[in-house]
Image (cartoon, rainbow, N blue to C red; front, side, top):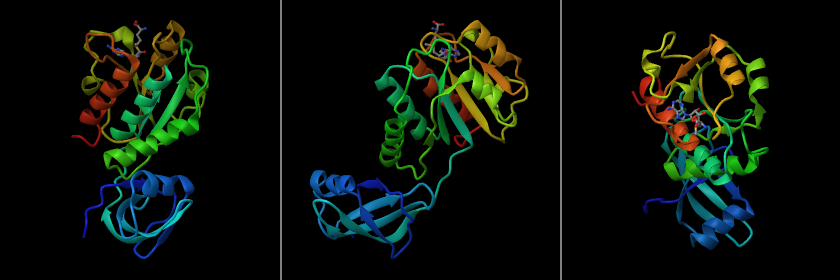
Length: 245
Ligand code: SAM
């Protein structure tokens, strides 16, 4: 039985004996780009049931059908961690979404802050990046990319049971590490907050530090670019509190 090399996210229930009708785009990718033919193996996942091996039952220019055979990997749900970040330039925002997906974010929340220089985002495009990242990294879970939300409204509506790891550039070089911070409990929902190229305003910092569900942390002795900071913060969180321990 040939090994399946291609992984495809499908928004469709998956189980042995299930058939999956392909969209035009999926058919073009499998049969036009990847040149698969009838009987070829494909790995499918839908973000809920784990990963399944399937084979091409019908291949056409505008569609096709896959026959689901057996589960190859169980569903692996990441820890309850949100990555919240201020959008930066398009390519680097795409990078943040891709890395957050690979590193196990359960949800990705673009946040408009005072110094954010991107007024709007294409949520559907970012969601497609998250799907693509999950397909490529072997994940079975796809985080939801939320709509852009203002920091003030986000905090107004915040559920205090979810702690925020606030990457505060003003703490650069300070010894405020997540692992030593007070009130850091290993279980429970968390979020990471990363600011824009212009950093956080004094008013934003004051409000964040006044919230008892916020843990301000340093990401070391150098100022990191926002996309680097997102990866660094996720690494720290996963190592100290997440599923990398
Ligand atoms: N313009 C800011 C400055 O020059 O101080 C830098 C902002 S930095 C490019 C973007 C975001 O990355 C910051 O808002 C913060 O969330 C995070 N960040 C970067 N370096 C950090 C550090 N050493 N400690 C904590 N957070 C950091």
